[in-house]
Length: 296
Image (cartoon, rainbow, N blue to C red; front, side):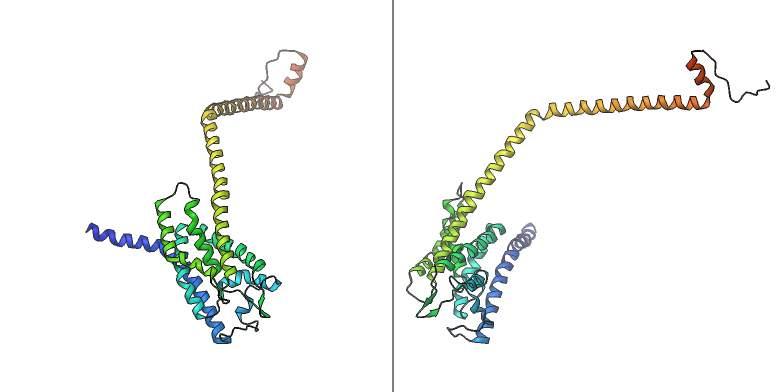
């Protein structure tokens, strides 16, 4: 009974951990497939793209103002079904691995690679060939950024975890050979995009582990120093604060007593106005009772 009770709990916990990560990857893949279906069914698979309604028109065209629009657009747009199908498995596997390292890591790395890798491609990529403008499309740039991050993360992680090393070896076995695409002499392959994405992933890794990690480390040291100072000098300061509060309360009580004495004296003077004159002349007079009958 205990074993049967534990199995559903383990499965439910695993599903809870993976469902949101899987949902993010599936949303990205669905967008890529919907875009390629729209472009292929509406405008065909022609190599020449002239219609602005064709989303492939808005890819990265190097060193042109229009090409800057392609920085956020191109990772979602592919040339044809074969192109998006070749990238889908890599998006699923590498994306899930990164998401298990953390949502912040996944989104930081993805945005960093799209922004800096895409801008690098826009700067150094081919503009045209045989008098035809080249449009750089696809998620290859993003995939190579993810790949570089996962391959070289053991060089930065201290202390190195066995799980991280295992993930790196697995990724190397599955996708290490894809680095050879950079040297492939195929005009249909944007080798500049692969290189820019790869170096953008390395740069993101450098920024995360050397810059952000140092900031966190310095903040941690400052917090430890503050805690030690508080432990050493916190108790006397608290006692001094209690003494100051007690003194303030006593002063306030004395002030209230003075006010009450003055108030009683004023009330008495209002009831015996003649006595105030006698007191001012220095005579000792017994106060009269206002309720006595004057005839008596």
